[in-house]
Length: 193
Image 1 (tube, rainbow, N blue to C red):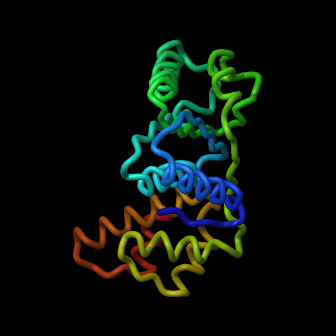
Image 2: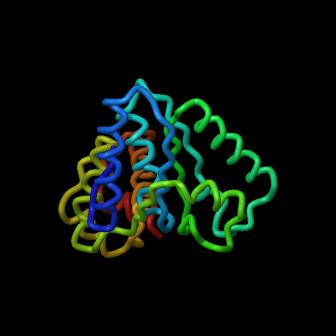
């Protein structure tokens, strides 16, 4: 499940191309890197690719969880190299997420060298005008119905990154289910402040 927007359009197109390729080929090694700031949709896009390819073993490595430092410790470097080598020797698709460009000189040389053969696409946040659609899609994912007034309030009071939106909506959904109360603006406000 991925919500395409202007900040992720070219990455979304690349994802569609990858899905089409792997649906028509049994297997081949390929490495694809999606980079971008926290909350720009990298992980959602990678999970959407994996979901669209249920018959393909997709390897995923999320460097974003180790950021902002590009000085990864030896354990992380070994872990990545092991996954990389497994994907390469077994003709698997390897999807990598990170917050910085894979050619960043601060990244460990062993990692940077392996990422140099990748297809790369960057993501960014949606434009403010796209946020209502993004919020509506996220709320539908949780089976929530948000009024236009509520969505407008959220757009005005939340940061632009979709991770913040999803975090709030997830918490509101949990509270709503736990206490059997409808999702209204008052409930949302409790989680924003």
